[in-house]
Length: 105
Image 1 (tube, rainbow, N blue to C red):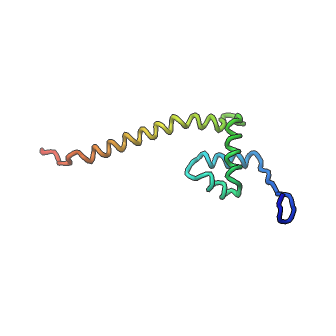
Image 2 (tube, one colour):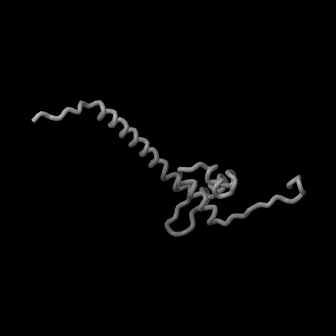
Image 3 (cartoon, rainbow, N blue to C red):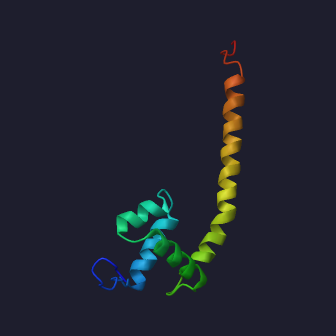
């Protein structure tokens, strides 16, 4: 209870679509949990809890996958992206160290 004026706290109830949309924003990356929560006017704890709940639930609708399934699919893809970025960086270093003299004709 709110001790200042003895009124009960007001809790917001959000529908399933709002929760899914918020979690999708989080999974898209680029923004932190705190940033997304602030933009949506919700607590970071709520957003984290929704992510956890939605990861455990099967997705609804044809062709949709749960958050957990998507995260599992993304794990090896992210590892491959890191590996390819490392290879690219190595090639950049090697390319820079090669002599760049025009071939004599």
